[in-house]
Amino acid sequence: MLRRAALGLLLALVIALPAHAQGKAVVVYAAVSMKDALEEIQAAFTKTTGIEVIKSYAASSALATAIEQGAAVDVFASADLDWMDHLDRRKRLRDGSRINLLGNRLVLIAPKESTLGDVTIGQGFDVTKLAGDGRIAVADVLTVPAGKYAKAALEKLGAWAAGQRTFKFVEERNVRATLELVAHGGASLGIVYETDAKVEPRVKIVGYFPEDSHPPIIYPVALTVTARPQALDYITFIRSQPAKTIFQKYGFTFLIKPTS
Image (cartoon, rainbow, N blue to C red; front, side, top):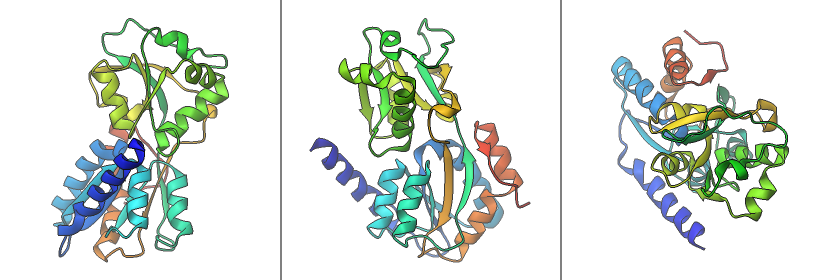
C-alpha cells in the first residue's frame, strides 16, 4: 500500500513538472542514472541551439507510466528496453525514432570507509555473508530497471534466495536512492550502475557483476507521439560526437556511430 501511494505521488509530481513548458523548449523524461551526463549535455545543447530543456529524472517505470497517462513529453530515455517496449506497444512513441543509445555495467558498492576490497562475483557468490550484519540496498526489483537487473544477476548466481530468506534486501524507489542509502551508511552494500558509483565520492566499487549474469543494460531513447519539431534537434545532438564524449566521461558505453 505504501509503495503504491508513493508511486502515485511521484507520478503526480512528474506529470506536473513540465506543465509550464512553452514555446521552443524540449521536455525530456530520462532515467535518473543519466542525470549527471545529461545535465552537461543539455547545457551544451542549449548553448548551441538556444533551445531550453525542461527535464524530469526518475525511475524509468514512473516516467513511462506518466507518459502513458498523458504527460506532455517530447523525449523519453529509459534505463531498459522493457519500459520503452511498454510505451511502444501502447502507441506512445513516434515510429522510427527509437535508438539504443547507451550501455552500462552493474556493480556492487560499499561505503567509502568499508574495509571490503575487491570482491570476485561469480557462481555461488554469497552476498548475504558479505553484508555481515548490514543490509543490501537495491532498487525496486519489480519495476525499476536497476532493481530488475540486480535481482536477475543474483538469481543466476544463486544469491537471491538467501538474501530474501534473511531479509537482507532493502528496496529503494530508484537507483539514485539506492546509491544514497549506501553513501550515508544505511546499507553496507548496494547494487547500482557503474556510472552512478562513479559520481558519488562517498562510495566505492568493490565488485563487478559478470555481464552474462543479467540482461544487457541498454538505454533506448525515442520521441513521443506528441513530440514537437525542436525535439528532433535534441535527438540529433545526443547522438553527436560531443555528446558521445560526455557520456563516455561518465562511464557509459556509446552504442551507435555518432551522427557528427
